[in-house]
Image (cartoon, rainbow, N blue to C red):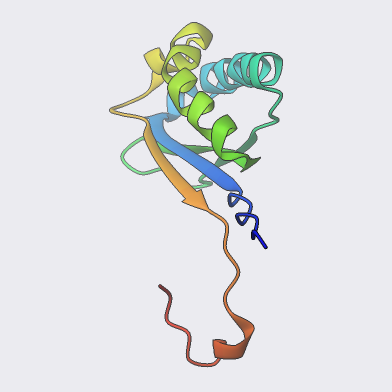
Length: 118
């Protein structure tokens, strides 16, 4: 009897960056253009977040892409730099855009009281 492989875990991408607070309106417009490009090209609806506070005259913004199949995640990772450039977002970023990739998991119930992680 052959066991089937476990399905690949869902993935999530978190992209964060800083931009001058004086550029808030331009960042919002560029994010809207980028979201349209992501929707049209990848069928994904991003979630957008921003810090309510400023630090040194800049705001931190976050794009959240989830849930993603592993293949979607790879394609989106490859496409995001070009999409940020095409949307005009990259020109507004102060420094670099930071990308974090996570996979979903379920903690084992039998070890829930002492489970520290893998």
